[in-house]
Amino acid sequence: GESVGLHLPTLSVQEGDNSIINCAYSNSASDYFIWYKQESGKGPQFIIDIRSNMDKRQGQRVTVLLNKTVKHLSLQIAATQPGDSAVYFCADIGGGADGLTFGKGTHLIIQP
Amino acid sequence: KAGVTQTPRYLIKTRGQQVTLSCSPISGHRSVSWYQQTPGQGLQFLFEYFSETQRNKGNFPGRFSGRQFSNSRSEMNVSTLELGDSALYLCASSLGATGAGNEKLFFGSGTQLSVL
Image (cartoon, rainbow over all chains, first blue to last red; front, side, top):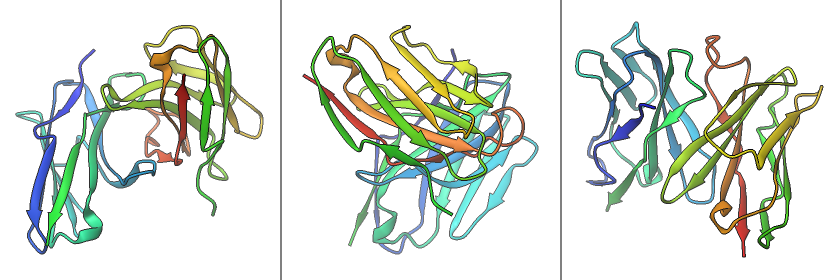
């Protein structure tokens, strides 16, 4: 089946800078997208979600952008902190799919 | 409210054995999904249960099975273990079944299974 993928396996940013993590999806029937953060030894933790009838959604220090034209999803983290260091996964579901389809993940590394 | 609880946290088995993993969802959540996570394949969907019925199943062999009880607690079983079954098995719960507008999954910390 079609899958959700991330552009980069690793992203290194300076503390205090903004981070942008990208994700491309291929399932045109996807109607719900979600970002998770996974720290070492823990399960994925919900960050933010967005439905296909929206193109932007904001949370606390995070923003998700959805571009349905090019099937692209991004997660923006403002003023990155050491605690943001983790692996970030995008996932999608839609069209009667069998559960969430996860991307491979981007490891966000925070440089002091 | 307590989160998703998975037991045991770690498990070591040998090839050919079978294993049962347990998951208690967040109180009030009726849907439980299971995922396998490996470094090579990432997170892969195993199956979803809602109201004691399996709704969806991923692309895994029949050795992988599960069930859900009337209190929404779930178990998954893997029979005739293979070395490749070594993985982190994650359970997630949600208020409703996927596709019903309640897809936000809350994950447990997982059970790390090692097959020797």
